[in-house]
Length: 464
Ligand SMILES: Nc1nc2c(c(=O)[nH]1)N[C@H]1C(S)=C(S)[C@@H](COP(=O)(O)O)O[C@H]1N2
Ligand SMILES: [Mo]
Image (cartoon, rainbow, N blue to C red; front, side, top):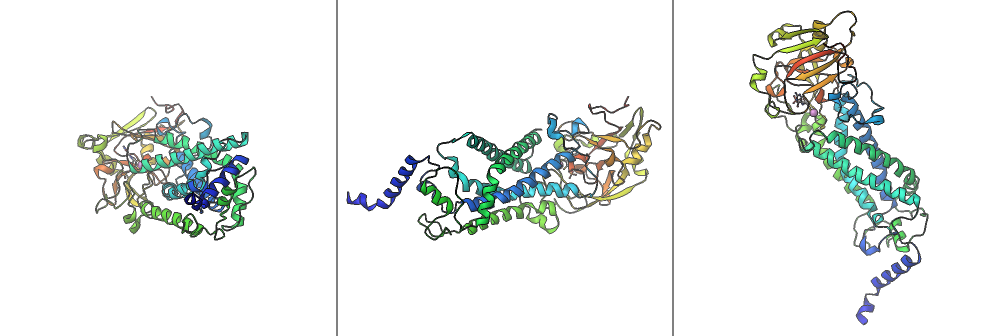
């Protein structure tokens, strides 16, 4: 019996817990199960604010990425044809500045990676609440909890799909965009609800600072749980060397999360920034060290072999068919290279986050090709274009370009890059390159270009 009295410290705690839990609606398990004194409203609020800024940026840059695909122009460009009002914001993607998609998508992917530690830390900081009892106190509480399930689940889902898409090719055959797009809208909706319910409290907690007592929570709370949340530990809230054995301050914990984010930033950002930083981009799928020297030695998204484009497809028998209405011409590569050649310095920027620096492309202006077949009166002066590859299988073999892209003087059917012919993997005999457009619109191994205006039903007006 004496031995049992000797452990009275713990026993006391248990009894106190049991008393409060019985006397009031308990909102958390006893200290022993969630021992960290670091958890508290301040830490949660700081992480929450970082995530608010970060997730908002991810949402906006993600929506921009979708708009940049020209999904409302032609069905082949649209990865989520059933989007309904969620596509209400779409707008024609500009061609200036030419590094626009490089910036927005580089930011999207880099930030997405860097926020992973922050998301995990935020979840850790609030995990006791997951087990709060009773699970639902009121209708409002039920809404709050449901929005949290959607928010937490949604953010984890977006993180997982996003990371997988950048790291592994073809894990989502055709459907990554759809999953990631709808997931983002679920997150956004849940975040708005969550903010409406939690933002005022987070602001109060931030104002009060890391060592202050938390503002009183509405509703009954067990004493021990309240002490944990306010950081009411032996050292006055610093959370250092407490009974729980913690040795880290709250600022220290934040510092560790920040260091984790910086580390991820360091192994991702280089694929977008380029230059010497490219060497540090260890997580870049196609965007690390360029594969060797030479003008054609930049990232390859899909090799000719991987999509079944053969030497024969690219060889002497290759022809470019250019059409507009009932007019069409067929050109050999030699004929194309006898047309006026123009040069444009443009990057390639992929949805996966990697991008090249500006490369010197040269070839025929899309506008000059259009003039070869322009039907004259009645036709739009500024046509859209459907660009089709000789590639037979797989994604990305067609892309629709909007009139603003077709008529930009820097938009080329490129024959050369860096002063030499395109390599087979970069789209020989000819590929498109369009300023500010996502990589996927720069079709390789082009076999046919059709000018005209899209009728919105997957057709081109006036095409025979
Ligand atoms: N025909 C065809 N064109 C294509 C692709 C493809 O798979 N097939 N991939 C696109 C994508 S997603 C990107 S990012 C760029 C990459 O160009 P690169 O491989 O020359 O770097 O090509 C685009 N053009
Ligand atoms: Mo891409």
